[in-house]
Amino acid sequence: GENVEQHPSTLSVQEGDSAVIKCTYSDSASNYFPWYKQELGKRPQLIIDIRSNVGEKKDQRIAVTLNKTAKHFSLHITETQPEDSAVYFCAAIPSGGYNKLIFGAGTRLAVHP
Amino acid sequence: NAGVTQTPKFQVLKTGQSMTLQCAQDMNHEYMSWYRQDPGMGLRLIHYSVGAGITDQGEVPNGYNVSRSTTEDFPLRLLSAAPSQTSVYFCASSYVRVGNSPLHFGNGTRLTVT
Image (cartoon, rainbow over all chains, first blue to last red):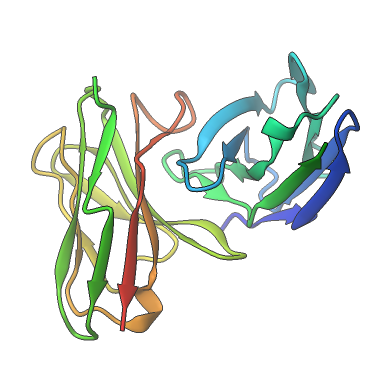
């Protein structure tokens, strides 16, 4: 089945710096890659997603890139702010498993003022 | 529009006890699922349903049962609780299959098994 690995597990940056979180997946036929943000004590919420026919997608300070050959995708946050502090999860849908969303272990991002 | 509602918010069980975690959504979503969240392990899929009367297993289904008698409700049953089931449980739903629409999560149920 699909295996999603996420790095780093923790990330600490200064306000205004950029943050990058990387995920690798095992199933080369996977075609949908969302990112969820979970603030402390809250529910996870979708922040951005990308499909396999697109190499990059941006939404204001957030961008996701996909490298299908290397089977990895990354979340980029620019001009980080304290409210970006949260746990971020990447996910993928395995081939043939259209209703199974498999998550990575999460990255705890801390943005220091 | 309440979204996805989970009850209870907190629960403490003794080993061997049974209980049902409730999940209801009022968005007319076809897809519903249960995840457990453990430190360092992310969100792991327990069971999911693509519509009333249809359920299937996720990554970690052992020790859990589900049913989907209505579109709105998707309860998770622990038949004989074990300390390894101590976790935060999230119910999530989406309008259609999970790759075509985002997952909406409930607020979670924190379960402790002693």
